Amino acid sequence: MAASEAGLCRVCIYWGATAADLALPAEVPVAVLIPSVVDALEVRHPDQEAMRYQLSVPGASALDASTTLAQNRIGDGAVLVLSRPGVPLPAPRYVDVAHEVSATLEGAARPRGDDGNRRVARLCGAAAAVVVSAVGGLALLRNVLGASHPRDVAALGSAAIVALGLAAIAHRVYRDAIAGLALSVIATVFAAVAGFLVVPGAPSVSNVLLAGAAAAAAAVLGMRLSGCGVVALTAAACFAAVIAAAALVGTISAAPVHVVASAAGVLSLGLLAAAPRVSIALAGLSPRWATSEVADCEPSDSSVSARAVRADRWLVSLRAGLSASAGVGAVVTVLAGAPRPSCLVFGAVTAAVLLLRCGSGDSAGLTGFAVSGIVTAATTFGVAAVLIKADGPTLVAATALVAAAMYLGFAATASSPVVLRCAEALEWLAWAALVPLACWIGGLYAAVRGMNLT
Figure 1 (tube, rainbow, N blue to C red):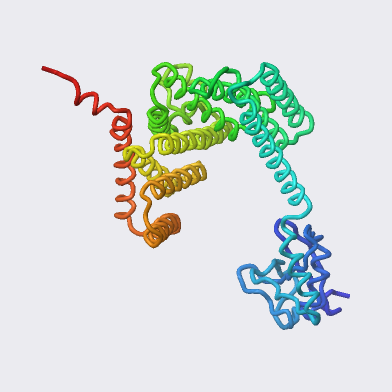
Figure 2 (figure 1 turned 30 degrees about the vertical axis):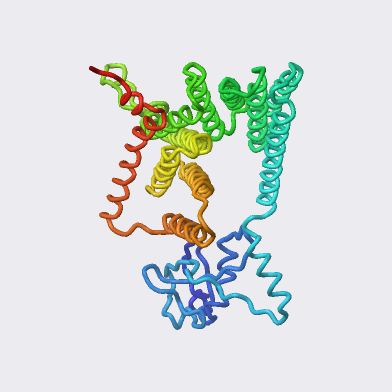
């Protein structure tokens, strides 16, 4: 007996690249046929959630689920497509409110899952270990500052070496990148404190020099030994190297702290402008001279992609480290140079440069710009408010205005190209004003004014 005579309809149904030839009852509603079609095509549900399916003729709308194949004039040899509609299923209705609350909370927590919870717990543990190590290092500085013993430095150095070894084991053996990065950061903290305590006597710029050099070396060693945390450890090494270079200049020149800090801030902001070109050069993406050797070996797509990822990591690291060193330089300038107006102006201009750069729209390293700019602006405003000694209403009004300006500066959306160009021009003007401000802080203008050129 033919299939059509038995009330069956032979059709070919497609699900993606999978197809199946089925004989379906022609007088049964489509909604009743769909579960059998889904089973025949072996459609899987990894998330074990209910899904709605529909049948349709290629290039046409879905068949009405309440109608039959015969009513839709689907005959033998027809081709149908099984698909999922774009409209989500309606939310289930609950008689008990407690069941609805439980289902809602379970659905909100489902995307994270057990793996997400474990990752959050490990991140919290790593952050707690780093914070406790930093607090312990500061406590040690507080207790033995100016009267350190070689055993203190030896203990800190040993702890740093052990932390570096554990970082290598954590990532190389157990593939735990979070633990490897946390241990590398702890080793960097211990090395910085040990370098600070190596110099005997009262604290000076020499202590900062050795602390920065030791921290940079520990960060580089941690990155090489563990093989993880490249972005964070590169940023830490860059920050420590800039601080060490500024301290070296201060040690040689015996300049005041606020002068050295302002010079470090200007140097960091200057290097920030060159960070994109430096990252391209370090990643090997810079153009080369056309030679026979270079022409013979064209880079493949995979190598270019790897270099692009490497360049992006370099850019994020350089921007994070240099923005942090610029912010620290401005904060030290404001704190050590108060109540000099030049130091306060330098802090305000540096904060403006960092915050304007944060709103430029470039996604790489925006967090570093934002944090450094906010800390610098808050420090400058706090020192200025203390020095001015204004009355209560005036201080409240000034605080409200500054807070509103900070919020609107971050929350405002890009309006017109003219406004964007004005903001860019303002950023470059603030950038250019930093060099004269640093010369003012260093007393260069007063020295030139006092020179007898006749």
